[in-house]
Length: 160
Image (cartoon, rainbow, N blue to C red; front, side):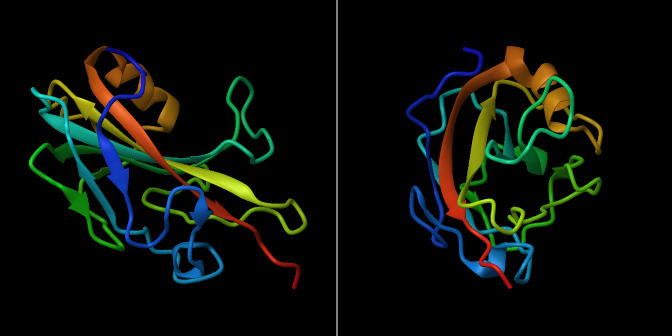
């Protein structure tokens, strides 16, 4: 299937589609990942991946745009969601140079940014190594994507 939206549904009890992400899930708060829930995984799903990307951030890497906040993969297909502050699965490297979730924190005065939380359903349990960046993860999983969808939240830093 490749990277195309599917009927898979992704939501969060913390924020609605295009709604503001609560401060607790940002770099100005507790910086904990929001709870996520999903349904309608494609038949044959064997594993899952979750990523969070801010396409509104200034370019930081030649050839890539935005800022990567979370790269998570090797999740079992029997999950129906993740609790707040989830630290399991296999964590990849975000653009903070760390593993795990790093919440929204756009530059002051940069306006409202959109944060795309993506869920990807894969046809195989690839047992990928820890520490992959988003772009390497995408290269490895692209032939195995059965379905994907997103939930978009927003965040704006108020001037201090």
